[in-house]
Length: 362
Image (cartoon, rainbow, N blue to C red; front, side, top):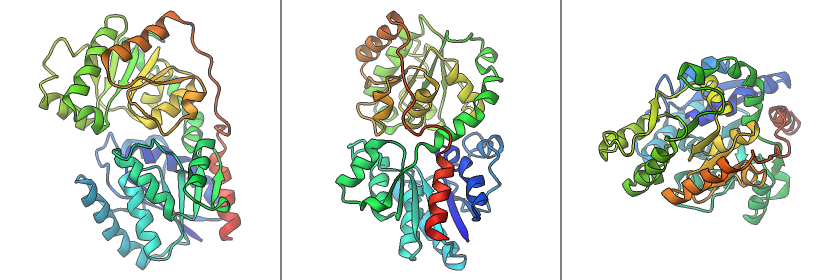
């Protein structure tokens, strides 16, 4: 039996990487379809190379565009593929536009859908990802969850219990299998920093980078933080454009960071692992820092991953300068907070997913 596995953007690649071998081990043929939503070498191809993901069997080459255009274009191109080569099931991961587009296309053609990382909710429908999550979960046949809150959310939305499977976090499978390789890079040394004496910053969410007031407030906090720690800022191409658009790139009172190019998986993992703490608005990095035991200050007012807060490693600090600096002060004045790894974040999630799909489809 053949499964079509859909990936479209950087966060997806870490989630499909550990799935390929377990699916083959239980007898599935896998067809990897890259939507092309992320197409830059540093945002796409490098992840296939570093994570040993087989070259995509099909690249739809969708590229950039509005949310509606991307979703409709992925659907249009996938319709031809699924009609000519119908799989036994379609596997989608995460919450990007390609995830929703692939799920909708499959369901319309009568093909069952497995959603990996289902049930996460921020309860903020202004986030495009929240809409993608809700809609994908509503039409999926298998809902593979990464934490207990996800099951609670799905049950509240009326999803039958037999469709929900608590399997753990597939991203942590990737992290655990690549951590030693990443540590051996000592990426921070190449940037002139020692272990635990620097901070990592990432920003990409429209709610932060498209709002000049919020972006300025975050950067003011970063400037103050940089007086105590070097702040390494692997910058998203879109964020770079917004800094220039608002004139922040030239303001010396806001640029206390060291801007570096987007990092590959191993180098980024190495930087996170060696950081004193991480500042981010990324969902995936909240999970990765939790698994690494590195303090994370999330530059958002909500999170769809409450287990990262319950474990003790992550704090929601929002975007206001004073709130960010107050959280940094607590980290500086206190010993490292103890944290624990959430249940089933043990590196075996992909195997559990493969066994369930094999049981139901064999």
